Length: 615
Image (cartoon, rainbow, N blue to C red; front, top):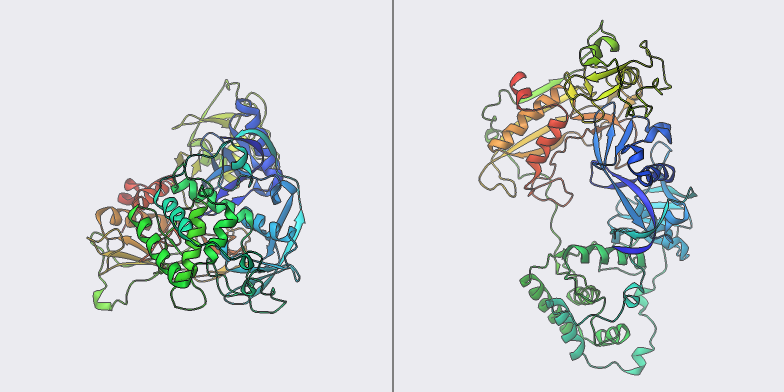
């Protein structure tokens, strides 16, 4: 726990594993419900503050965002940031997407950009925090380091995020102040972990630096000029910063140190090794020659690997040669001195696809007929009104309980608070869902049904129980599946099931966000992989049911590119890396099969569903 002031930013987790911030107004709305405690009922209706978020409700008990019309669940979190950073000043950085609308950067990226802007730097390279872009403040442009494509960026002012003062859980996104460790009290005893012992021994053995070296100016290689408009950005990252590349912001360094130390470093690791000041350490390191640094880098790697410290790869973007050992040694020493457990290695290689496979090696999947399946648009059953559909799932409640309807947040004893298109039922009519027993205004349930897919199914907004057969809005396409003679990492004893999804671009139908408008389909065909084990085949059979029910894909806005009216994944995660797991969408992943079974169950797809569907 940390006693301090912080700004609170509420964030949601997208399908790519990135935490996206809610707007300041929405964060204030959620925070007000948190501070209200049990009186708020534990649910937050986001449409009350932002009409675009009308389908969404946040359940504070489970910390999930629920979309009422689709049943989609996403985790949310309450994160803390420094009040002096961008969210504490109401500053929002955004980039312009292909459709001319503006998309905010992730909060960590926006903070890094704002920090460089306040330091009056002409540009900032985002590669150290995992983004291959350069922001040029002179032209207010974003430059892709690989393609050199440029986009406009902008800085705008919004509300300040809510401020909290007092005991708050330490978050990786809220680094402590530089002097916090010094103010905390007397320095702890020297740490005995291998990396700290190594650093202290190296510094003790290093000869003192000449006086001339202490007053020397920084090397010219670290003072290269920033690129002007149209200039090629630097092509090195991480430890290998080349000429002209700015150092990461102090906030980014502290955040990296905080998160790494929280995950792996011993609790007793000091911020800097005792017995030597930071200045003296830097001077001593400057006197080490190339041979000494190479020897030190090798020794450090051996010690850290032996102690079980996870490795951190350093990538050299300027070519295929390995990272300069001397530079790697310097980086390792400085990171170890900051209490970061690190071992420098060659970077792992991204392996998206298996080795080439001939047609004769491709086999059908045991227990699954055919090797492909197509879907076309399925029309909803006609002749049934929403009221007739819901009548199958509801029981009338003559004496409603004195509690809130979690859809409109009005008391059940009062008329519904829904203000949209008027259903034909009375606003004070109350019904109870037959299986789960949750009670709502029938007026609200009809409105919720009308805002959804209108496929004859209903999902309880509270417990997510599905009534009927839930279907989606996936556009027409083809799903192929077969076995290839290669094994996935973590599954050496079986072959691999390869799934190939193909969806062409087309025109949106009446069930899509913008009927009559064209939609794009980027990245198809998409290749996905499962182990050819008993559980892997079980997952495949359920994915076939999900495909037939049009639940694998949807049309919406890509959270990766910001492009709207495009085909996106629809809450059932797939593994698209064959031989690595650098993006989080590959193997090994011991929990993946269980996780995807849970995601399918949340869509109403289980083994019973597979038995009812034709292969």
